[in-house]
Length: 172
Image (cartoon, rainbow, N blue to C red):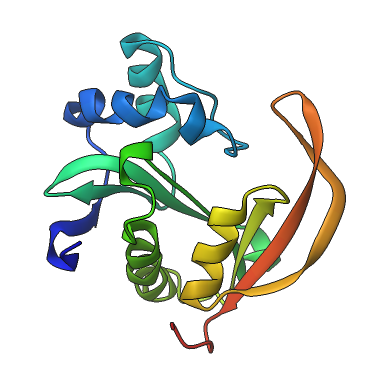
């Protein structure tokens, strides 16, 4: 994959058809805690308007400027603004091509500049999601441990690994 074809930008309402291609796929949304599978154009429009556009740092992962996924960073409020959660997904047609690895590297560089108080990025990854664990480790995230029965998602209480990347860490 030519890295120059990959970019990050805010999601636009005009991206709705590309957004639906991946957001309506249960395989893509399977491990997403804050997003359910989108079933209609109306639901997609509502989600983009109410959740994506007001989000503090939500970017569309683009291939040749077409939305194929997302990456978001949400800093904690108040005194905890030194910490933020990062999450991402990409359409199943693009799995295994290094796109998320490349995108994470781009995003890390940007968010530490965009949020000067940010010191720590955290990623929560379900125990079974081996692909996402590999991506985080390739970029340089440190697996800190397993949090058993951490939270409820898609009808089950899940075990998750917590990963971190500090502003002083090197992107691999």
